[in-house]
Image (cartoon, rainbow, N blue to C red; front, side):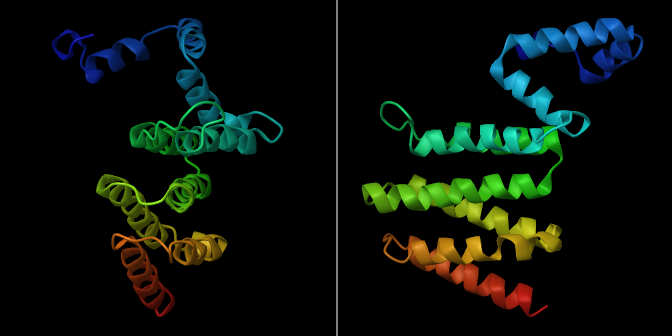
Length: 187
């Protein structure tokens, strides 16, 4: 649908607020059936209300999307940054789970480091994408300080695993992690 054909959210919200609950449930069911992305999003949003280890299962589904962009089960890697980042964003928005979101962000960076260690030097855009996510991780720690101890080892492992990567990536990662540690742990 073209942008000019779209209804404004404020107008749609008024309509939805006046809509019967059963009709809204039917709408959500239709969205659930429509696509895998919608199904994953809806399930992640309500995973706490459903019994069992749904949170872990949903996290693994989103993790698989990220890993598959770097190391697919079949065929050649596609390395679509947008798909991997969308998995992180979708999980975060749907679940409201900061620990799981941070876990997925680390999955992205760790697989990027593993990818370049496996296949050799990649282009500048690759390194900027992986490094950009590392910066977001550090920013996330400032917002959710209580999560740092849970992920500290992974942060330093990323630094260690980057030691043989060229193009200035190793230095950027090392400088960022060391400076972050000094500022964060020295606080």
